[in-house]
Length: 434
Ligand code: PMP
Image (cartoon, rainbow, N blue to C red; front, top):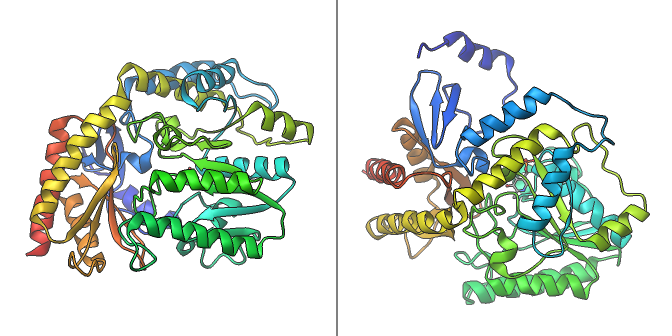
């Protein structure tokens, strides 16, 4: 439990500061729904460690898989496919992906998986234009960031051309005044498509969407929206890409958002939740698309394509989700957490909205329910207080929109841990508003 102050100094002196939300302490380890800092303090994790720890931190199945893969300690020339990667591809096709998306490739990060998905679409269609849905977050690499919300793109020069972004489907803050959320979302789509069609050169490739917009404020579009997006892609001979970095593998109480919406994309990218904390991502598509792009010379030959270590862990994660019935648990525990948050909403005027699906929930903070004016200061202050009181919370702040807590504990979190976390949040809110 002895704190190594030297390392705190080393972090300050020798590390590039890569994000706004870095913490004063360093971290030593994690277990289940708890992370432990460099003083030995235990912090309850309502963020699932950047949404990766679906089955909890350091689950025995992950430890065993790392050990197993580490013993073999092999990393191949990229063209040599390890046995375990073939097994993962089979498991994905048979148990996890929507029917038809039976061909997969495995890489490392969510950004990378979206680059792969867009490359596939470009090669298949011989086009290059990408139409994205506003508010979505697809990653930091060139193509992925061009399709993501703009605030993180400033300062890095010209972004990839040929990417068009439509207004987001936001039910709580409809873009079009006078319309309700669903009507506004559909009208935004219609308008977005019209504008895109006017600007298009005809070299169309894909529509990409994060089907539940998570980092952009936990926005669940209406089902009619996703169906309309599917039709829009078909009418334009574009492929539909679902970025299911966060929504696949049980988080929302379904296998993935494609099941939830009843809409099947042509390409699905998955990442975070699959590796349980290790860098594993995948992209699945149909045999027809795979055949076509293969014949045109598709490549994605990186150092860590088909890497056996994360693949071994991925298989263990998928097995654990099934064995521990975590999809069902996302529904039951998610419903319980939601009821507790709604109870807070009944007591705090500042909680304007509680929304989400399964264990991916959003709580939006407002100065008043009538004005819906964002309450950024309350979000920042309360998040800080929660942390001091032993609860890690992720606040999503988009200046022009709102401050939203994304509340997404590991699916293995116990009911008493949920209660403890919500009680801390309650107390932190009470003190902040005093
Ligand atoms: N897509 C979505 C929906 C994400 O949430 C993220 C990560 N926040 C990414 C893509 C990018 O993944 P990575 O950070 O692993 O590159």
